[in-house]
Amino acid sequence: MITYSRSVTPDEHVVLVDVDGNAVGTAPKAAVHGPDTPLHLAFSSYVFDTDGRVLLTRRASHKLTWPDVWTNSCCGHPLPGEPTHDAVVRRLDYELGLTVVAADLLLPRFSYRAVMDNGVVERELCPVYRVVVDTGADTEAGTAVAPNPDEVGEVRWTPWREFARGVLDGSLPISPWCREQVPHLDGLGADPLRWPVADPAALPPAAR
Image (cartoon, rainbow, N blue to C red; front, side, top):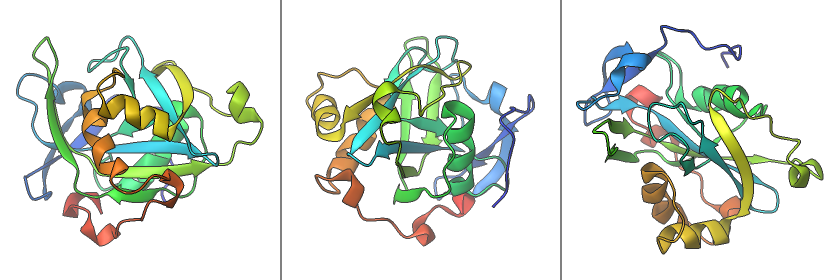
């Protein structure tokens, strides 16, 4: 597995893909989001503790897309040539200070498009992963997570069923991609720790 430092390269690029998930080029991450955002590779991850609580994060107020909005644990973009699994591990360290070695693939072909009120578009081919961490007593106090203020404004642990109900009935404000992902995840079963793991071969070619 490739290892990365917690620093972010200023000229970081994202992988552009076609509708079949094949890589068709790259573009600077800082410039890719706008009114005509091209389809590009990303991921979403949901971090659970051993009691089945999900870690929610509020996006930092200076983020270009959906600032201050609550969402799932961590999202990001694989670097060119980086397997998506490795990108999940890298970004969990960078954004939340979590050191993990395994991420379970759940939704290999999830894709969405969302538009902000200001016209900025997010358009991603976005496989979804589960990560389970054993934080013990530190979980309740929140000391096991070290949010990076460049990315995360706030964190909280919430029982999965409570969270899923709030998303499904529309009573819980959440990011548009998370709102679309939760019904798919809910369909995998009541216990998030027992959800079946998808075959990595089902990933889009650019994500493998």
